[in-house]
Length: 398
Image (cartoon, rainbow, N blue to C red; front, top):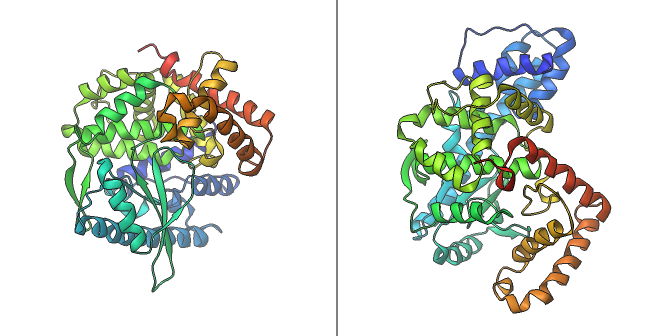
């Protein structure tokens, strides 16, 4: 691992532990690179103490203040939106955001992006849409198989925020058993949300065991599409430490095995132990090869915060031992279900929907991805290589 990465991880680890006694001198040669890496991963507050009396300190301090201000703004937007739905009889479950920031020693240091709310009762989705649109939320068109995107602008300030209204916790995979496991666990029939209070306001959130499993799948989705930043590993570490006694790890093992993602869970857990200070006493029987964990972490650090734009990746990307024409056909079939969710329920229509899907794929390739068909397929092959490391789905030994 690069010396720069080792220094950076020391700062992150001390920040997660709120170790005020930690001191690390950053050489002049390393300052610019370390500052850039911290900004790329949205973790400037954690490395800020190492930049006192340097030319970078003033700008980094201002970015830290901006991050803290953003936290309070997102908190207000979260409360505003959840209150609107709750007061009008539409239950919603808060995902990520301030519920994870609450696990940090300084919640404001956890960079927040958009707001994610999950409507797990299908009959409430239409109500939520109508309610939001009646109160100034404007839907933004996005090709997604698990959420709708809305933008809301506060009239007084003019500041706008994005809401992802989930009807699935994560997008669909090519691998049916994983989809079935996720759908069952987070269905309204099985999921029992719990109440948690953040900054004086009560929200429904996922129970700890279901939350951990969701975080694993959330990381997997970002890993398959574009990679993810170290923030998600920090979230995972702190959440496990906060809720260890409330998590049923035997169910996590069972669900990971059913989804064929056990090896990924092992790698994530070992990576958090080795580099972020996660206690070895948490789920101690789960182990992974340290070299694999190091390779996994290096890829994450190189990808940056959430990697490239997820919208440019193929929806439903999965893991394949070999890529051939059948692979592309299977991917196209998932694309068809995403683009034509209602019509695709009727197999008799598939012969018509397949060419329509392919036409849309070609159009998006040149207009949205701004690339060529050859390059898109090449990128797909390259991204598929990432799954060799984590051994999921068909490549899993579980």
